[in-house]
Length: 249
Image (tube, rainbow, N blue to C red; front, side, top):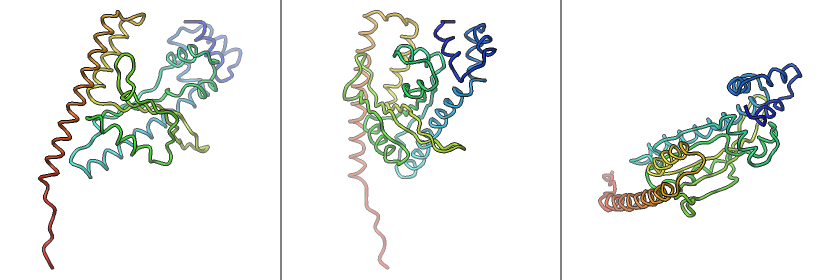
């Protein structure tokens, strides 16, 4: 186990000397299990993140139900959640040069909890984000529009860093969370791109990076073509719609 990980765990939650001695002898897997089971400060913080994640997921499930009743299609194809692992949290906070403490994690890492919403068309993304952000227990901290400004690898999505109100027995807490909204096609690309890069973590060969970038551009073009077809179909439906006429009394 890297020494930085061990020191991180030694500083979590104010352990006794006996506990510190035990941690110093643990393997990485044993320490991970210890963090998940016994570190009260860390566990309490992670519980807040899980509650925030569940709250946002529930909000989108409610939107799904409301939109399904109002329209002939639901723009939300799927809602997924994820929590960063202890190892990922340690790696990120070390890389950014912050202290390895629970307080530092809370103050400096805003994407421990994440929710991803998958839509059919690019226009759905902005409509959903507008509806979601109208809720008064959600605060927008940061907006990253990778549709307007794609990442160097071609990735396109809307990322929102939020503050979510979480209500616990002891009161209300405000918890950061990252919300990603992207299309089905771009989600397919991003999932495979992540898998491929995970297999070669040091450095992806340039020819593969170039091919991935071209593929991302192709998928973006496909999204735009499907958006145009969708708009044309919607226009045909509107032109053929007949108003409901009630008989005279």
